[in-house]
Figure (cartoon, rainbow, N blue to C red):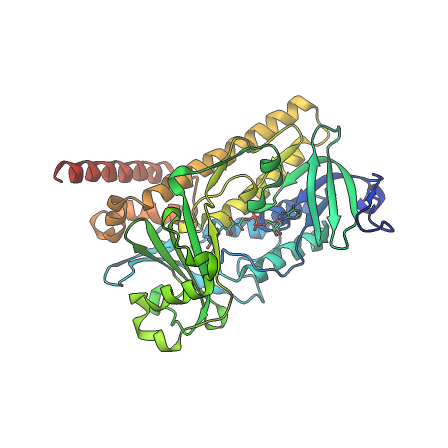
Length: 438
Ligand SMILES: Cc1cc2nc3c(=O)[nH]c(=O)nc-3n(C[C@H](O)[C@H](O)[C@H](O)COP(=O)(O)OP(=O)(O)OC[C@H]3O[C@@H](n4cnc5c(N)ncnc54)[C@H](O)[C@@H]3O)c2cc1C
C-alpha cells in the first residue's frame, strides 16, 4: 500500500494566499474535522494501516463545550490505544449522575455500578481542550496525517472521485481528491448544510448558556465526581460538571422561546446573575468566580435526512445532535467515528453496490442510536418521567435499567429493554391519570 507521502502531494506548498493550487494528489480517505468523531475515525483507520488525512480548521488545544463522558466510551478509547484512565490528563472520575431540583430539596442518584449491562461502570469529566487534543494527537501517533489550521470550504461530490476545497490559515487554497469523505465538522456540518439535509428538532428547541467557575465545592462521598443535573420548571435544567483543579462547568438550558435579549448583549452578565441566583449555590456565593467567558448556543438539536451518500458519511454532530442532558453527544461521536472507520474498511476497493450496502448499514446504526437516545431525552422533559427519576426506590429494576441507558448502553440486554418499555408505559399512564384529574 502506498504511504500517504507517496500518494499525496501537498498542493499548498508554494501557492500564494487566495490562489487555488491545481489538484496534484489523491488520498484514500479525507476526514473533515478533528474533534472526537473525526479523530476517532482517523485513529481507527490508521490502526488498520489505512492512509487517512484529517483537516481541522482550528489549532489544538481549542475550547469546546461538553466535558462529561459516558462509560460506553471506554472500549472505543481502548481501541485507539488509550486507557480509560487517560494517564496524565487532568480529569475527574465519574461513577454516576445526581438529579436534583434547583432548590436542592429533592435529589436522586444514578450509579453506573448498578447498571446490569455496563461492564466498565466508570467514566470521567475533562476539559475538551485537553481531551480533544489528546485524541487528535493519538490519531497522529497512530499514523494519520493531520493538518490543523485547515478549513474545508466546500466538497465537490459530483466529481468522480470527489474532492474537497481546503484553505490553510495563510489563505492558500487547494483541491484535494479522495476516494471517500468522512464529514466530522460538528455542528457546522459542511455536507449536511451544502446538501440541505439538516432538520431542526421542533420538540427540543433549547438554548444553553455556560461557563467555568471556581469556588463551587464538589459533592462528597459516593456522589463525588457525579455530574449534577438540576431540574427547573418550564422545561429547563442546569448542569454542574466538576473539573480538575477545583473548577466547575455550569450551564443553563432553557426553551429558546424564553431566551432573554440581554444574553445577546452580555452573556457574561447574564450567566453571572443566574449563577448567583441559584439556590443550590447559596452556601458558596462569596467564593464563586467565573474563570472563562460565558458562551451561549441556541437550537442545537437536529437530525439529518441521511448519514451517507455514494462516497461520503456524516459522523457525530455533523450528522445529528441531541440536547446534552444525558451527555450522549461525545459518546455518539466516538461510536460514529469507530463505525465509520469500519464502513470505510468494508467499502474500499469494492464496487458501488457493496459500498452502498456497507454505508447503508452505517446509516441505519446512526439512526437507531439517535432514536434510542432521543426517546430518553424527550422523556426527561416530561414531568411524570422526572417524578419516577426522583423515586428510584419505588421500582429498583426500572432504576437499574435507567442507569444502564444513562451510562450510554444503547444496545442493552432484552430484560433492560423490556424494563425501559415498561418505564415509558408507566410515564404515559401517569400522564393520562394526571390529565384526567385536572
Ligand atoms: C450546550 C452543550 C453541552 C454539551 N455537553 C456535553 C457533555 O457534557 N458531554 C458530551 O458528551 N457531549 C456534550 N455536548 C455535545 C458534544 O459537545 C458533541 O456532541 C461532540 O463535541 C461531538 O463531537 P464531533 O467530533 O462530532 O464534533 P466537534 O467536537 O464539534 O468537532 C468538530 C471539529 O470540526 C472542526 N471543523 C468544523 N468545521 C470545519 C471545516 N469546515 N473544516 C475543517 N474542520 C472543521 C471544528 O473545529 C471541530 O474541531 C454538548 C453540546 C452542547 C451544545
